[in-house]
Each structure stands twice: as C-alpha cells, then as structure tokens.
Length: 224
Length: 224
Image (cartoon, helix red, strand yellow):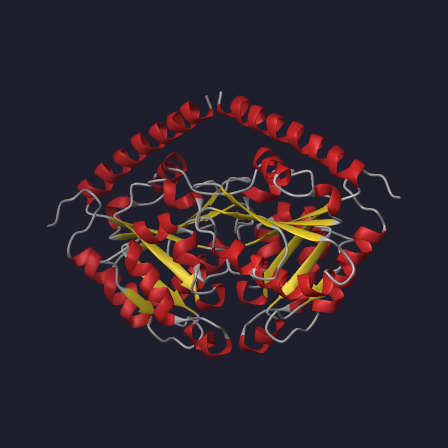
C-alpha cells in the first residue's frame, strides 16, 4: 500500500514536471536543478556564477528551503528575480511547488532559471522538476566515497561541481577513488573543480551553463 | 490523502520505536541515533570513539546506508558487532528496520548500540527509532547557517558534535552566529568541538556517551 501511494505521488509529480518542461521549452527558457548536501555550496555557487551569467543571459532563481528565507535574501542581493520555495519540513522540492514558483517569474523575459533544491542528496534526485539538467555539487570536505553511497544523484547529474577544492589538502579526499566511483555511475558528465572562496573554476562552470543555454537545452529534447 | 498515509507510516514507525525502547530499557541497553549530513563524519566519529568506549562498555553498531556496506566494513574492522541496514533508496532509517537489526545483535551482552543514520539532516529527525538520544553531527565545512535552515534536527538533539574544527580557519564558519541560532532552537544540548582527524574532542564525546550509559539513559524515561 505504501508503494502504491508513493507511485501516486511520483505520478502527480511527473505530470507537473512534464507540463513545466513543455512550458519552458516553448518559451526557450533553460532550467537547471541544483542538488547537493547541506553546506556543499549551492548558494555560494549561485552568488559567484550569476554575476558572470548576467552579462549574457536573463537569469532568475527559485530557492528551495525547509525553513527561512536566508538563501533568497543572499541571491536577491545580486539583483535578479528570486522566489523562495518553502517546503515546511519537506526534504526535497516537488514539481508542483516549482510550477507555482515559476508562475511568479516573468518567464517570457528570461533565458535561465536556476532552481536550488533542499540540501539533501537522497530524495531530491528522485523528483523530476521539469528541468533541462541536474547539477550535482559535492564539497571535497564531504569525502570521496559519496557517489557509491548515494548513487542515484551521481547517476542523474549532467555536470558535477566539485566544490571547496581549496580545502582538499586539509582533507583525506582521494580524487582517483572519487573519479573511479563516479565514472562507474556516470560516464558522460564533466567534473568541474571549483572553489567559491577563491573563484577557481567559476568561469568554467558559467561556461558550461552558457553552453546549455546556447545549445537550447530546455529539457524537452529539442535543440534550437 | 497523502497526509493520512504519512500519519499511518509515522504511527507504524512510532509503535515499533516504542517497542524497541521498552525492550532496550528492560535489557539496560543505551541506544544513540547519530544524524548528520553526508560526509559530516558520522563513521569517522565512530571509528575514533569506539576504541575509547570499548574500554568500559560492550558496544555494537547498526550502520544505516542507502547503498554499499562500506561503512559497516570500516566499523567492523574495530572488532565490534555491526549490522548493515540498507534502505535501498530510502533517505532515513525507520524503527521497523532498526528493530530487525537489533534482533541480529546479542543485546543481553551489550551496554551500548550506536545507530548511524543515513546521511541527511531533514527526514531522519522525523523518525523515532527507539533511541535514548539523538546525536547531531555538523561539520564546520557545512557552514554556520544550518540550524536555522534545518531546525527540527537541531531542536531534537541531546548533544551536538561540531566536527572538522581543524578546518575552521579555512572556512567562513561564524561560531557566534552558529551558537545564537542553535541556542534559539535548543537551550540544553552541549556542543562538543571535535576533529576526527586530529583527535581533538574525541575524549569529551566519549565521556558524554559514558555519562548517558552510567545514568541509565535508555530512552524509556527511567534512570537506574
């Protein structure tokens, strides 16, 4: 019975996600779903990358959190439209809440919507939000064993941002072991080494995002 | 309808947790539920603390993971009984699975069962496992803003282990802001600063655990 209801929830979610994907596709808006553990640096990545992206693209943000509007305030300070999505205890974003957030944005005047999911690398990977691609962020401080232990996310991502590489010499992070496990789950997604503190890799990540927009990756399988 | 089913799941969980709590209470076994984000250092904390705890107490471990038996292998190398609990995608442990794990342990020859939950600071806090106390672990690399953003866990914990303090000078972690937010949610739980790399604070955490055992804290409200 529990399985049945879970399927029901996922069906409702997938219908909303499919509708969002069609809508964004017809408007030419690229949506990215940023997923990481708490404190891996999703909001910091947005803070560092959006100033670069704004030079070429019209950007908005949906900020997913269990509680508080702190992240939306941080991102809003950059001067881009931002909507806070509060799950009120829920451990992941669902497509229905994202659709309500998108309805608050001027979609026909946007190229890119960055969706920051709740900090969690288990559940968010299961819920399609209608995005063009999932962006995984892993902090080296979390350890190199995370792909094997949380395989679904690492299988699903189209790019993996390895953040806080400025800390790597102070940790036991084993890059070879990480890459071996990650490539066992995902043969294609590029790994971009980033430090939101020093700025390392930010331009490379911004270039990847720009590539998604320029190729017309809107999650509907169509390219312009 | 979804709310009804969620209540049903929580009711089933709470009945199993209550039964576990009665069982452990009658046997004089203290169970602790370790909760943190992925990579905050739950397994490392066990690896460092168990050798100290074993000098005085009979210890076993339940290892919760979505996938792999890597953590159980790490802990098993210490020579204590360990059972791996695999959730197969589930983002938290539930009391029914914990009860099955406990049934595999020689409970009448134990003083302490350390339960390592799935790496996640949202959902695990909602599920009572029948433990005497919840142990929260936060890595300074995750940032000081986590209590406000994930309030339930920080409200529920009986002790907060602040791990990776050897990295603090390389991060933007604001201890005053952290303590202010944490104390707003939890006025009593001690905060123990730890580095599993350098060994700082490990004895203090082991002493806290020993205190729980010596006071007969078995989660049933009774003290011996």
